[in-house]
Image (tube, rainbow, N blue to C red; front, top):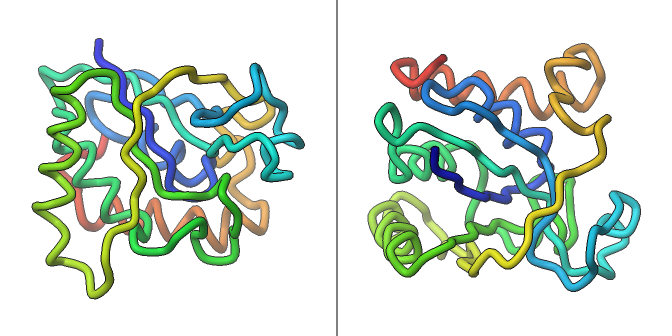
Length: 173
């Protein structure tokens, strides 16, 4: 089992998509990239901790590769906006990919190079070593699955999930 930690706006969006990807065994919402040990949601939302809302993806690389997971990532968020995704604004919503080895870093950089011409603006996704991942509070886990009729879920998450299903039908679990 391999892991990949991604941030691309609200973690509910990223988690909802990757929970539906073939080969992904678990998508866990959490926090990474900051200075405070074991931060709370409120602390992360203040912007003071430096953490990003992220999702730790546990996947079977015999079924789906890191490169394929990154291909999905570039499609479901805007990697050209700094510290924002739509109305979600702040450093906690930055586009970021964390790596655990030089090999993973190279794969991420190669993936960015491969898709950069697909965007009108420059990709500003942060590529950083993963020092620590902190799982988010329980009520954030499987948020979309538990609250599909909530306003944010209907207006923001559902279209991202639909985009994934339309663009990558062969990757649907």
